[in-house]
Length: 264
Image (cartoon, rainbow, N blue to C red; front, top):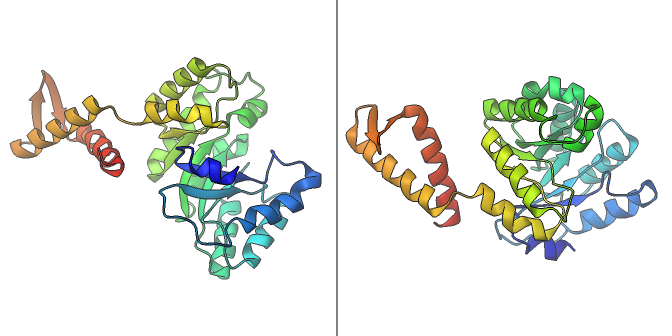
């Protein structure tokens, strides 16, 4: 499944050790997961990571100990159910002590984590992204797992990520037979400031990539606005009847940075 996932078109492939693994299988899963990284990984643009168990649980401690002991740690670790910055800081320090360069991706899916989202986002230079864990968050908040009821929680995570300059990824859409529902939810979270959305099946990836990738028209418009704004050198210009000021340019540069990475 791992090679297939790497070839699926996803930007990130995450090997699961947490909720998707039964307690009786944790040790075997941990051994198999770490074995995947014993050989050099291809330079194919796909981020690789392992989702460990919570640092507050025995399985999480065992995961961390195994990672610290290996000479070939995963390039990144996904941390679930983070409640306070201390969890991230401790793991950061342990990885540093072991000489490991693994990056960190943090899931905000608890009430405590939501309250401390900004402090968590800023607590370690290893963090590349926050993830919004909608299923656990809904259970924590005692509300249905729907976009409307989780609007406030999602917004707080997006806000914390933007303040810290991190990517922010949304929870996967669990109904595999409702691709249109997934697309609508992805568009909504994109418009909230999310930079991506998780996937639990390869058939979801193409639509998600489409939602979060600027269109050719958007890229062309962004290049034109950048060229005209920089040529004017006045701090503002009017293009297509709309006032373009410096804050607007941040979005234009972001679009072009994505386009350049994709070779568009």
